[in-house]
Image (cartoon, rainbow, N blue to C red; front, side):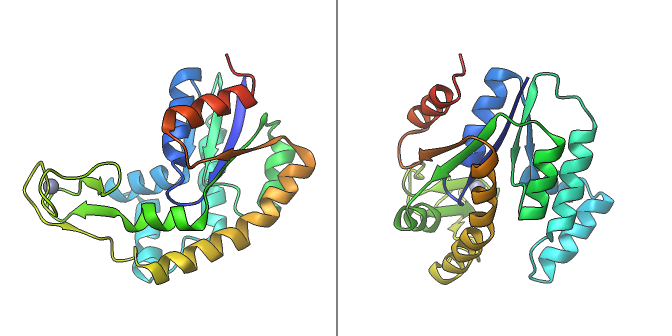
Length: 211
Ligand SMILES: [Zn+2]
């Protein structure tokens, strides 16, 4: 059984890397973001709670995130292991996590701030169908027009340099103590996330001696 935690700033490709590992090794991908999105789309009680928090301009608090991850892992359907993405968020949660699960290690995808900026500020969203574009990797055939529905491509309202700087600051402030704690107890693989998806994936596998 394999148990991992994956960390990385926005734009680091964390979700993509986690999905690739989950597919290859039959791991359950426990993505806090995906669980929240699913609940919002399916109008569950949790979804309504998340929607309220987001509508009030706040971040979902650590306790709610913890409940979601605990409940997900309590299903014990992860026969071959799991990869957790978006948790833990603070040192108390990290301690609890380390005591409860014997994890194999932490994947920390590192990306310089300038590159995060380039990637995140290059993101566009179709106002018609919601398809994601990226002016670096996935450009539309015609500028600012969706290939699928011809809708107008827009930036997400919170993808401004100022908002991003705040999010990055928060991210580093919150995760630095978590990573420090992990480093004392577990193997943390620092991975340079500026490279291609394939290169990053193969380095993760080498670092954790995955076949
Ligand atoms: Zn569209």
